[in-house]
Image (tube, rainbow, N blue to C red; front, top):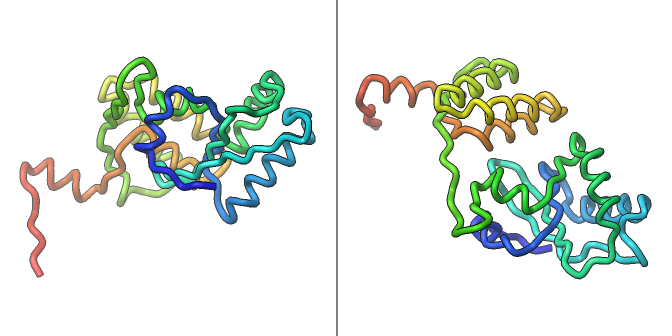
Length: 192
């Protein structure tokens, strides 16, 4: 297992893989578990297992990329498994993750998608409150479709931590104090 940066990930537009999002604990257990599950489901064929696995961090979440190059697998069954287990594993294709999470233009040079600032630090931490604030920020910035997509993903996420990671994929999380300072037209200086 190798660690890669999101900048390295952005260059992988010519590859395909399975991205599992929000992994915690011992990552080798995740790899072994995914290999075992996919073998049981008849997806990995002829004793093959994922060996080329990369780890990367994005928006506070640890993710695994399982390279599909030179793999003996049933891609149709893998596609169905990915859809059925999405709420559990956050599985997506690399070719979907790059444009939708990292803003990569799959037909051109890598480009970072602009995310609007959203003052969530210092707000009531109820996830529905935070989701509402983030959705309102997206709509105010002409990103209504992204607001809808974000809400759907959060309500299906199943955990507070995953929901926060999802919000961070759509907006730059800032503090209420930062927003108030900017509203006043000046930045307060720290004095020690």
